[in-house]
Image (cartoon, rainbow over the protein chains, first blue to last red):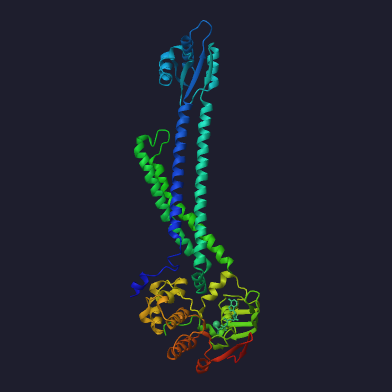
Length: 293
Length: 236
Ligand SMILES: Nc1ncnc2c1ncn2[C@@H]1O[C@H](COP(=O)(O)OP(=O)(O)OP(=O)(O)O)[C@@H](O)[C@H]1O
Ligand SMILES: [Mg+2]
């Protein structure tokens, strides 16, 4: 008898506070978006570092032949000089056929023979201690080669700046979704408490403290947000996994690599959503109760 | 008797359960409903509070349950100044009293059993510890077979008895009841009066607000009359 009665205790707050499926749907959608933003930011950051690393491992040198010297000879001389500089793994003159092969898909066969092409040397730098643009220029000047060195530092800086920007944007998107979720919970808590003003006064008159009453709302909306957060995160995980499968071993595309560990990070979403909801409900409920004195 | 008032043993050592000195109260900016109320309920006393409809009986009980604060004067509960006790201390006062409201104030989404158990549950008691007492209390007020029924499906008299069961289940030191026999027949009224008297004999201080002057007279208890915002009548 006792076991039967105690096993079926009604919740202290009525179940139907109103608007709860709506709140769950909003939180699930926000969590889905936050998860996509987080995964996108992680992938963008990883991609940017990959690009920056390969850009940093290469330099391009444009050679201007001296009077009476062919471009190919000048390029070969530059390549030879550069190969001897410390911090350079390999320097290779890009001959005319190679340059034409690169341009053929873009310009077609017809114009290529007449096109004045720059004479280029591609320099692969040591990954750990790459030679600087300055030391490459100095070596070329000493060898009497007139050339311009591009160590891609401009590009690298831009790629890194873009990656930083994406991270900041993703962080802002995350904070915004957290704020929106908190606002939805604040609104729901206020509506719930207004609808249950009679119940709250009965609880209070029967000896419930403000903390205890706030705890009821905190628990209710915390659990709701945990469930909704799990649903949103699962949906996002499913979407990302699909992209990961479709994209093969390099992720969606090599440019935006999603890895399995990113998908696992999203599993913290329910706990985060619950924490945000719990705090929002607690603070709202306490403020309301204390304002009622 | 399923319950016993707590702290009955130190009755001799403690001061009056309730004391009001020159208390005035008015709703909002309206006229004063209570003017200059002086009232002392010694520990273990039993009083009826009568007065015509609108005299301010429920209002006075509202002050005792700290649902409203006096606009002037002093209010002491259990020997402590409760007139402007901070909100955080209210649960401590309220857990020492049991209140039967004129409009019952039951939780409609809970069974009769859970309604009666509410004060115990809010005080942190485990179901296993109180289930027996709650069941016994429900039987005492004649609701043994209604334990799993929710208040909307109960009659007026049944709700009233349920409200009484909830008020006394935790063995309060002070029992305050507003028209607790207004909706029941004479037999049940006598039975409920006996419940309050038994709890009083066990040490609880009891104040019953009622129109029913005959019941008050029959009880043999001291009668306080609220008239013109003041208390007149015998103080036990
Ligand atoms: N919430 C309120 N706001 C404003 N006035 C109120 C409020 N509650 C009661 N009153 C007024 O205060 C006066 C006393 O009301 P109260 O309910 O205390 O009377 P009562 O003695 O309990 O009457 P009854 O025997 O009919 O229950 C009445 O004039 C009533 O209109
Ligand atoms: Mg009244």
